[in-house]
Length: 236
Image (tube, rainbow, N blue to C red; front, side, top):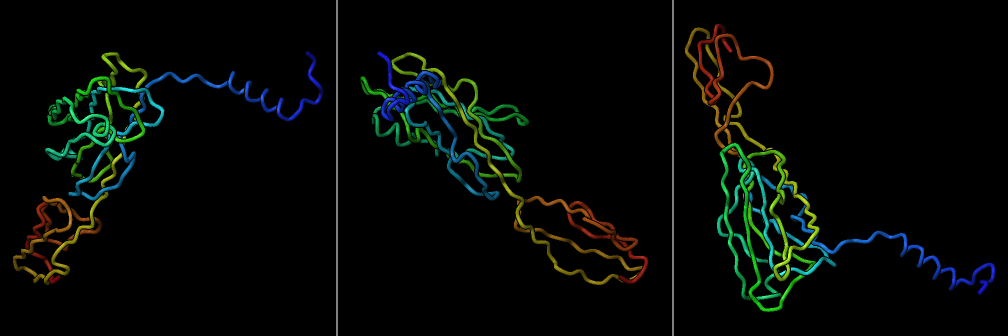
């Protein structure tokens, strides 16, 4: 059949839709899991919650393994704060799980290891929503990353669900405002021994003291612990 030219609007729309469908990518069924919020700023000493969240339209699953790696010099896992979240709890009240904190060497990252399976027959779950949560305490200032690492996997009826796409989380711990006391120092007398201690507050002890600029009067020195000692060679 020969189509009229120009094509009627409805036929043009249908032809365009068919072309887009033919050209569009074919997405494999899988799971996209993110640590959320994907970026956050928290003060040193603050406890905050991290959630593993799956996106909508993901494949169904009834079991999963999560391995979350973190820097123990920046973050501390808060014991007994791990718990299944809404996607899991609404799917099945009966489940099996093993949760461990894997401590590596002191200079290496630590890993939270979780294995969770639903025990309800013929029940699976899918996104969107949170599947698990933990709490961490922010430690030393700096920027660090929480990562879902190798071994993270999802299963449905004993079969591995693929692909699994993971997204990390960035945590920024800003330097706190540190106050130094006393605000002013007593005068020094030429030839007389001088001793004055400085203290810090508002940050994470212990504090290390250095001169930001300039120099102390001749005869005096500042220790890393904050003690100014010596004998001035002139009145100061």
